[in-house]
Amino acid sequence: MLASRPPQRAFVDEYLRNGRNGAAAYRAAYRGSPSPQRCAEQACRLLRHRKIAPIFAAAEARAVERTQVVVNRYAIDRARIMAELAAIGFSSLGDYLRPNADGDPVPSFADLTAQQMAAVAEVTIDICTEGKGDSARRVKRVRLKLHDKRAALVDLLRANGWATPLVPDEPDETPADRAARAAAIRARLHAMMQAFAVPEPLVVEGRAEER
Image (cartoon, rainbow, N blue to C red):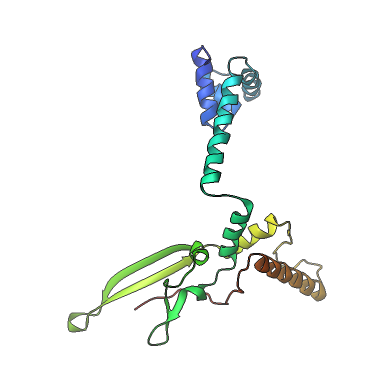
């Protein structure tokens, strides 16, 4: 049974709409509301109201059910999320380039796997004309942008509890300490690559244009 008074119904609607901010919902529903602290207190009281509490409980249950439907539909679990992050973190621009007849690198998507495509953030194709008159020719330029590798690697480190900070040298850090820290980071990244069966990345960076 819905709350009978219009302000109560307005409070319910606003609370469900604004992300469960009780004080803001109370302020929106009851014009001329008192101080923020008083709004929070009154919101807590309304949330426990015998007519209103069941409404929120039912809404929460529906939200959980809808979330589970999405999770099931896309087979979302920790392993899949980690695999997606690994695909981005260990991607290499060299996987997307092939030499043309002149030996210059140009983008190629012919043999890419689903994992490699997951790392692609943007592909831009520009078609224009270069030259004038009889020397004019049609030119296609392809620009490829990958997702942020560093952000994905940091997320992987945090998700696995490997919180070694990738930060500049500490003021009191000795060369031996720096070398040991770098070796530890490399070892952890290598372990992650082995865990997700991701090949060692090529050191290739930059953009390619197809002419």
